[in-house]
Length: 89
Image 1 (cartoon, rainbow, N blue to C red):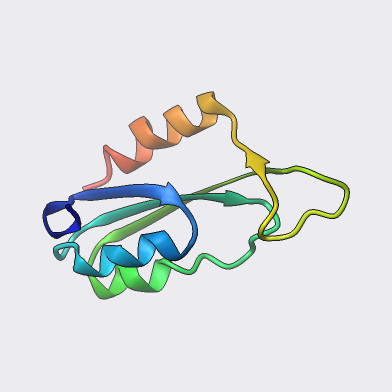
Image 2 (spheres, rainbow, N blue to C red):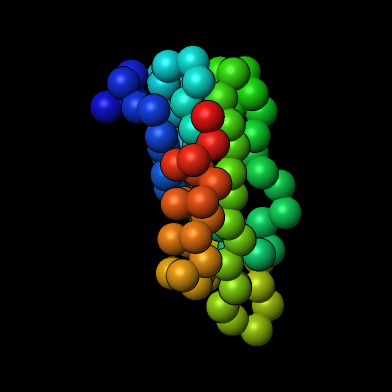
């Protein structure tokens, strides 16, 4: 599935490593907790001559960390997807 993907969207984590099998020019759009300050897949997108986008949501719990559950605003996700990710050449 990744071999023909023009766009990969997913939770920032090991599962997105499969984007390495995507073609040049792939767009990678990650969602993650606000506590995850590193955008791990930015380098991969650049190595693929692609684009990288991320949306960081509100972390749950009293001591948020990069493994915390989190929520994102669906409206914010939609705007970013429609106005930036899908429009960006």
